[in-house]
Structures are given as C-alpha cells and as structure tokens.
Image 1 (cartoon, rainbow, N blue to C red):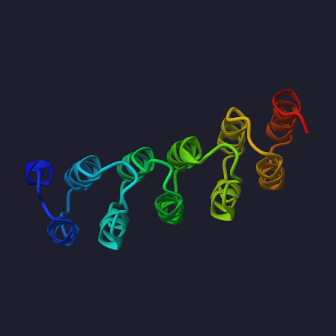
Image 2 (cartoon, rainbow, N blue to C red):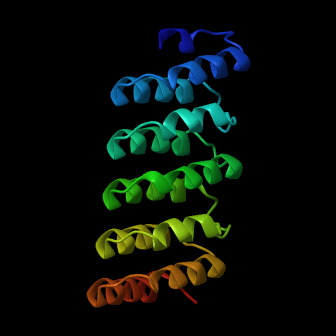
Length: 178
C-alpha cells in the first residue's frame, strides 16, 4: 500500500491496482489498502466503481465500516460520493457498524440540505431500535432543515420500540424549532 502514497500515481493506475486488490482474501489487508487509497486522494475527489466493488468483497462488517467511514470522512461534502457510500451500506448487517457509517455520512452533508432518501432508507432498515434512534438523534445535533426533520420523523416510524420512539420524539421537541 506504500505505492498508493506516491506522488504522481495516476488515477488510472490507482484504479487498476484497486481492481486487482479486490481478490485479496484478508479483510484487514484489503481494508488497509482501501483506506490508504482514500487517504491518498484530495478531499472530495470521486472514488471509482472499482473501489466500491473491492469494498463489497469485505465480509467483516467492522472492516467494511472502516472503509466506508474513511470514504465518508474524506468526501469533503461531495454528495455523489456520500451517495455511493450510502448505496454500499446495505451489505452491513450489524446495526452498530451501520449506525457508525450513517453518523459519518450525516456529519459530511451540509446541514441546510435535506438528507437523501437513501440515508433515510438505510436508517429505517436497521433492526435495532436503539441504533436507529441514535442515528436519527445524531442528525438533530446538526440543526437540520425542516425538510430533514420531516425525513427523520418518517424514518422514526420504523422504530419498533415504544421507548426508543418516544425518546426520539422528545429529542425532536428539545432540539428543533419547527
């Protein structure tokens, strides 16, 4: 992975290396390589489909979370890149790991922009009510637009625990001025 840190490595060469790397069997080694690839790019620069194809071969939810979180944090608010991260989140089964990626994505979206439907869908599809509430409340911390709050309320309809749903609604009442 040291070669990815080299100045002057073309995007085509980097993408070719990532396409080859997707056959690496070790989740840890592939994760480290993909994170180095993300870190070697300018913030906000696009990641190739090969990057996300390689990430999809990682079977560990923890390692996949590390890769997608790194991509989100390096996105520079690039909404197309954040959308790619959201599309890749569906393969993460762990509610905790999925919530971590969703928090990283939400932190990069401009607060005055509504979160995309893919975000709300990913949050709604989690089976853990505690994690769902945590993700939705973390968005409230950003002083979201009324449109985003409406999206969060829609997503909260999928929270199965009465307690967690009530806690979310209390948080909305405390943290927003609708």
